[in-house]
Length: 358
Image 1 (cartoon, one colour):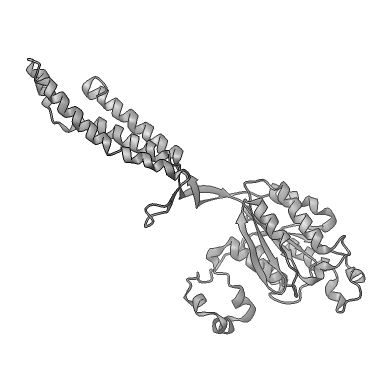
Image 2 (cartoon, rainbow, N blue to C red):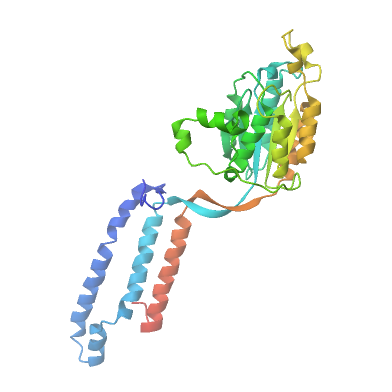
């Protein structure tokens, strides 16, 4: 159930309790009936002071009942357990897993294969990373895409990792650029423009893409590598780029923004020997020099697949960035607290003005 769609959608976990709100119109009617009854009874007294009090129509007389009425309305609304997207300050820490899904990852120089080793390393990492840290998944072969946006839902991430299908090509630089676009959506990072150039990219964009509002590329002032403490990228790959943005060019983009890249190298330098005699064996070899240089440029670390358990250092070194984010929040406690304040205010004013709770 949703209300006031024009402002922010509100949902109710127990919408059936909204039926209690039908009792609210009875309360003002009951209050008016009591006033009339009290006025009639007052005429039986000889004291003019009592009659004057009963017949009084000052605004203060109605303030305490009005406050109590509003408190009851909030309590009845709270019974339905409302939730809404509320802007809240949030200390955010983010890790993006960038996983190579190229066909070279099926080589079995890491048992049972590079791909399985990458999947197991990623899932082992997810099992240890603290629950409050958001993790996203980017997959790449000849192109790169976000397979799972950043979330604290670990089962969703594991499902995305298990659903990986291998493809042709290896565009490591593209994966880094996609990760940076996720971390800095206001920087106007455009992978298509970097890959094809401005004119060709504009010509191939669809009409819907052209209509979509996209931030203009943002000029940034380079910061020291590794100085952006609220996010990091973990790259799992065999490191042999075949297409896309140059790996070290993308690494420089990350370094200039202070984002550390931790690299897990999968395979062995002579991995092509285990490939069963496939052609172009050079592309099946682990390119450790490039991967190590990539990690060094960004202030990260390089690990071989056999030492992937050391990845716990990634989240141990993460800080957090305080930002305002809209998150679905249950408002029950907030409404109940507001109702308590109104109830106390109504009772307090009644005692202060009239010496009793009216």
